[in-house]
Image 1 (cartoon, rainbow, N blue to C red):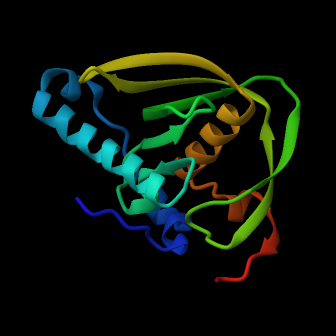
Image 2 (tube, rainbow, N blue to C red; image 1 turned 60 degrees about the vertical axis):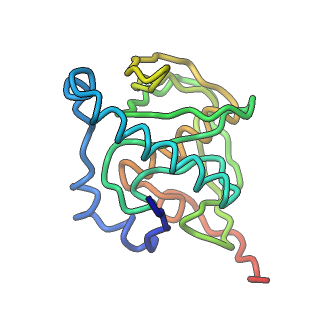
Image 3 (cartoon, rainbow, N blue to C red; image 1 turned 45 degrees about the vertical axis):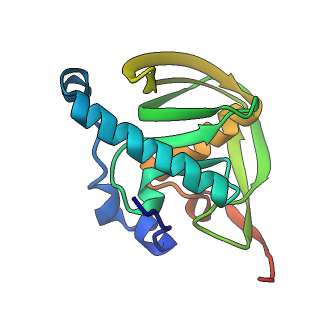
Length: 168
């Protein structure tokens, strides 16, 4: 499977956002072949993100319109996220400078929650497992960034462009 970034304009297209589908967890639990296909996709997404020096990658960024993404936590471990939900916690907001693989050479100022509560499915030992976590700091920021792609809220929409870097 060869992954490549789709143009950012496609990610921002409302019609495309409406086509992003959740993964049917019941099918994954019953059908090992479907589970293995999803695991292959998620592993390829991790390889792609590493190659591109990203901290995460949402499936929509590579033209896969499913509610899945991967991200590297602050320990350096990759997390496979399926059907994520975010529950914001009444915590302070942070204003940060963010980059995105979909907007190369651009830096945006974005406001994020310092802490969030999340729920999602993941794959552990070739099995689908539900996780509930409270994330803070960089884990929270990266999770929110990738989750935003799922709902069409890219940093270009949500943030303010503060710097264009020259291509080398």
